[in-house]
Image 1 (cartoon, rainbow, N blue to C red):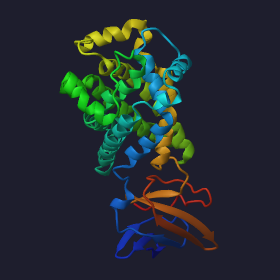
Image 2 (image 1 turned 45 degrees about the vertical axis):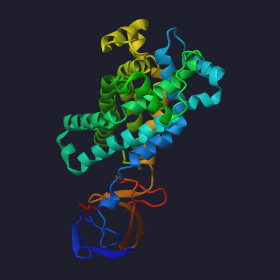
Image 3 (image 1 turned 30 degrees about the vertical axis):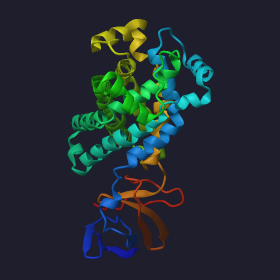
Image 4 (image 1 turned 180 degrees about the horizontal axis):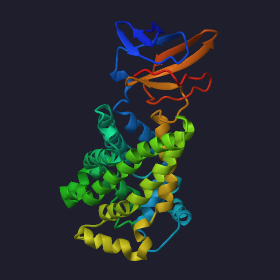
Length: 360
């Protein structure tokens, strides 16, 4: 249901509420808006999880290849590793462990994005990069803790094809693994590599979310880039590359410890020594498939969350409003329609949103 609002003399009135604005030469602005439900115009708690799970359906093969490269005793490139997977399990093998991966994304990623967005609504992000980094680290840590068992199951199901028949774990499904691991190895086995997983998630959240926000702001302010698809695309690429590089050593360590047999790595130091078996590049095994996976994944997640779609969405007083400006002699008509998937102002593909109007 829409209500008509007439903006005159620097004031926008909507029902009993008024909002200051700066028309800057435009005499009238007729607005169609729905401003009653403030919460409906913020990103939903499940946006991050749904977006990342949907993207995981596309990039899962690269994640499996990356995991295989990290545990190899003899070096193989990405293509040779992919051929080996096809030889062992066929093309369906690229989706081994996907149920655990998807569940992890829905739980962990939803919580990470939600906690970070909560920080935005509390205006704690206005104090600069350090606060963003700290808040993202907290969000990543809390989000990873609940997902460690799912990480363990995902990695073991991804790599089980490499084991001989008498050595394979042969988990039938996610629930079977969740029951058998505590029964056969003790409940602590579900948290193998937990420290590395938490560190990787905390640093990864900083790279994926906080760095993204910071890069986007710097590009917008310093290079005067418009808040459109190009800005979101560029920010996603830069943040994904930074994220991949700074988290890869922790990801390799996490994979080794979660996939280990009982007693294989008594301490994290033993796993670190094994990780260095290939020398300096040991901690960066699987970096290429990680980049191939994470860069498009970050872009697509931002698209799904509405950060990079040219949908003409404006964030008005915390709300996500669809805008469309139709100019006429002596009048500018601005149509606002409530939306929930976008959070920043950008230009519509069919109409031009007026950038000078202020709704604060």
